[in-house]
Image (tube, rainbow, N blue to C red; front, side):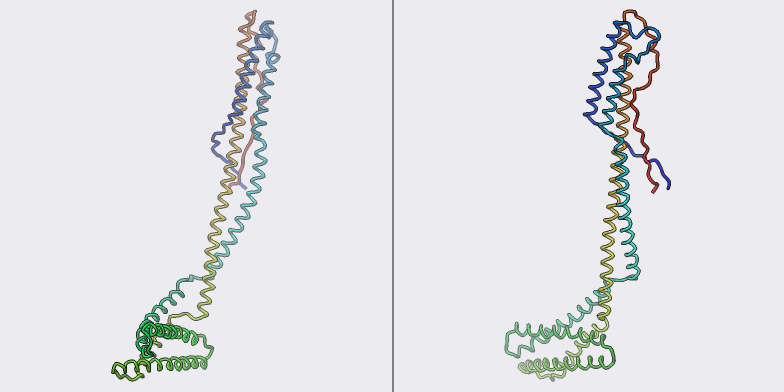
Length: 358
């Protein structure tokens, strides 16, 4: 696995309570440096030769080291990286689960898409729609054609219209059922039975309608043989039936279309779920990145505070030297003032953050 250093803008973290504590402690320690310097100056200490300034500034050094410890205790930079490791392990496991779930759903979609093989979900509904529209137009003509005939019963026009609608609708439904029964027939005998039975039933109905229609016309002194009306109605019925036969899908086609449509809906549902899972993965990555940024900022802020405290210490040492020289009676600059002292025991927090390339 290739690793690389993660570079993240550290940004700014500011702890006003911590900053105020550092400021107050620095003021106190600088005042201690002045006080001690005056005290030792009365005795002309440090000694002009062979002495060490560290003998006189231990209180100052210890004070800044204690301040550094308190700052690190408040920020606790070292504790954030074990937490980061625990977070990384948790989110890595969570991310792995999401990736597995995404892959499974995508694989299932791929298989289902292959099974659909360019499935057109609008094909069967479109065939239904065109067959229904065509036969509905014919049915409207039937309703108008039959309404006047039923007025021979002596009832109102509304009753005649209602009766005509019911019968025409029944013929409309039957003109679709008969072709479907014909398509579903398993042998020649069944198909012949469907055709003969349908024609006998519908011819009987149309004969009755023709008689009503002829009787109505006779009241207006118009004489037309009912046979012609039967022929006209049979023509409308045959047109509707042929439309259904050649346009409407069979029951197996309807069932197959329903199954394919169910599969298609399942694919769409899984696509939405995949999108949500991917968004959750991205959210996890953003969460890890944001927490990592905060931890790195805390570590950098800790090192910044440590650097400031070290500078405060060196400033206090210079204050000690200046004050001591001002109040000495011998006017001599001790040779230990040229001594190079070790920095206070305030180490930077060392950290390196590595991530996998992928």
